Amino acid sequence: MSLDPEVHAFLLRHLQTIQENDVQAYNATCAVDLTLYEWWVTPQRIDGLPFHEFMMQANDRRGAVFGAEGHDEAQPAPTRFDLSNLHIQRYGDTAIASYTLLISTALPDGVRVAAHNESRVMVKMDGAWKVVHVHKSPAWQAPHVAG
Image (cartoon, rainbow, N blue to C red):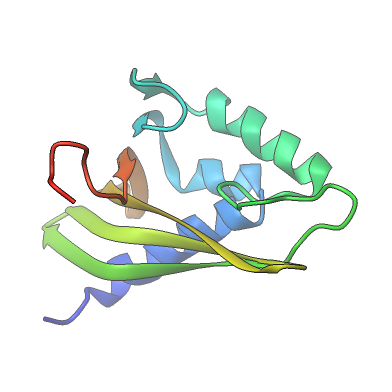
């Protein structure tokens, strides 16, 4: 199965705005009524852009990257993101991307990788793709599954 190149390029650009703490570019890639479920933040739905604006501005001041493990404010560590098992489903002007987000951070004692599963719903509005909903879940074995 091939990836939809238009949606794929948009998704990578959107995620790069987060990596760079670029609030203005991030907001340009999101609908104003964005909704999110971020399991490590709160079990409730998060509505709108101000929540992430605050986080990204705080991370930028600290030299941190959203989701990076083991951040040291005195010496920011290089980070990168990868999308494992990326799958894009497109239905006209609506697309869903699902993947495991891997955020790697190079630390003095080695590379640490944080992982979680994500689904991002994107809608083409007035000719431009916008993220309208994000759902994140942990990328570890659920407690009810026998180890």
